[in-house]
Length: 183
Picture 1 (cartoon, rainbow, N blue to C red):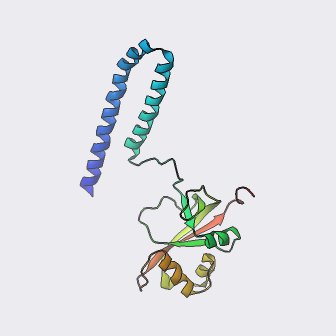
Picture 2: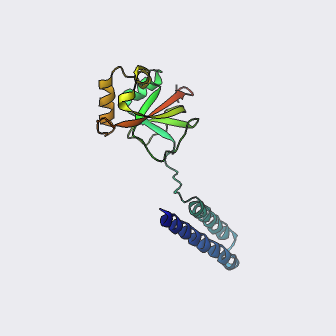
Picture 3: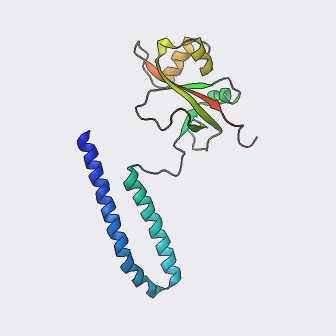
């Protein structure tokens, strides 16, 4: 792990060095572009600046910046989303993840699973509890919008989890912030 981080650091440093050299070389190209006129200089300069800013963001952060989908969203099945809309579901069950994009206090969008639509509802994460499925009590089941441990088992199977005595998940508790868009 330590060598991997060092390798990533060196790769990002190399990318920054190359980008810096390209920017310095850009001054010479800038003088050459005056021969072609101001409009071409402005267009080429704008495109170059945008590419450079995105490359620097990547090199500095080490993450790819996606523009197509918000990072912080929770996906729901159609019936689950309907229960969230009506206030019957105030939490969701997910498989544990080592690195999650959001924390308690984060605002996320609720979207229909399997679609690229923008979020339908905005939710604030109130808490994230990791617990064994066997330890879920009646209150946890109620916030999930289900009535029995059998429904919990079915929900866990849909997530692709193995059901055994060590099965544990993350109970993500949320609150609705606003009404639906378009209503």
